[in-house]
Image (tube, rainbow, N blue to C red; front, side, top):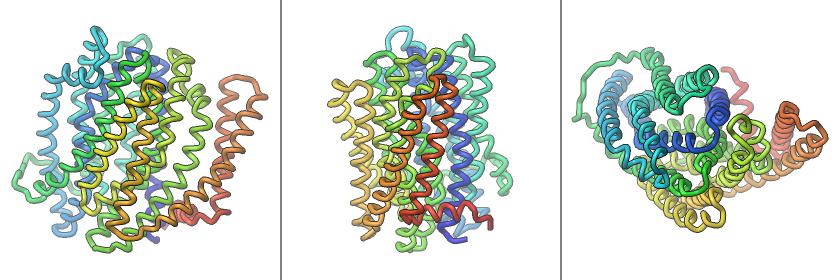
Length: 514
């Protein structure tokens, strides 16, 4: 099996599991919207959840990113036993750190909520503090999750981390279906804690099968632990900078009309579905390969892997962007509008989704480019780029929020992501020399042309043909699925007609069984 086919096959496997998980997550969001609506309680829950996972989500993502090349290096020099010993050491250190963070979070919760949602007052503020404190065990569980997934990814075992979203969502769905009627929002946060624990527990069997046995040994003098700390700091700062964008958006949205935070949250999650299912699958597979190519000082191989990844991302995100722009309102209406989620919530969420989708391509490519820098063990450039993103986002937020409300916050995020992605491309070209920008542009133009033709067909099927059918949700949902399926099939055919070679690589990689 060629490297391209291996990338495609592994990415397809991750994408399938992630797609199932995200489909369940989508149902979870629909049920939360149905049971709790889009108002004061959900605004409070989403802010409290952000406050709960903010620090560990940032630290964990940074840790996961730096652990993969370090685990790979240890495996080359000290074998599997060396990797397992380091896993045990880093796990104990992370456990101590997360305990401290959880305790600090408990006492600082009132301050954190004030920062995240300055518009919350009285009962809503007290509820946010309460929910934040209930959710603090998630910090510890996330620490374990990121360490385990980093170890497994470095060993190119992608299955267990890919399926961890399944039990996570099942816990929510069981609660929402059987127990959430007339329930207090606090119950939803308790369920969030239980669900978070399943994400690391589902990876334990795979860790054990590789020979891992837990011990209480902690070696703070470990050279690789020190190296991890050196590498993780810029990544941590860069990730923290990205979280600042989230904080700023929610803080500004808390002063807007009720439901603004929920609308942004729901819209962001729909938009992130594409990134989580497809783009993250590609970058997850490619990152260890890039790290290995870097360790071998093979820039040609780095450029080859990079080119495959970027063009595959374009194949996915260009039609997805056009599809969301065209179908945002009916998607939100058909999937979310029920129960406490009313027409106003549909309108607010769909408008936010439209403006978030404008930055989908930029956000996806930026994720890929960051992985390239991390594979070089250059963690500083993405950090600086993140700072630039925040500056742009803050300026645009302040400019756009008055005339556009919560949609201005979404548009600011999209513009910021697109601009900083272009900066990363230019900087990478200086570091590596020519990286095939013309080839990327050709691929983009071809996918854009195919997507444009696809959009015309989908528009005629859904809006024209669908408009002749009864306005019953099940009928409209069926025509939506049919329109999207036929549009996707046409897009696939057009990509082959336009000779986009990465499409053929994807097909061969998925179908090849050896």
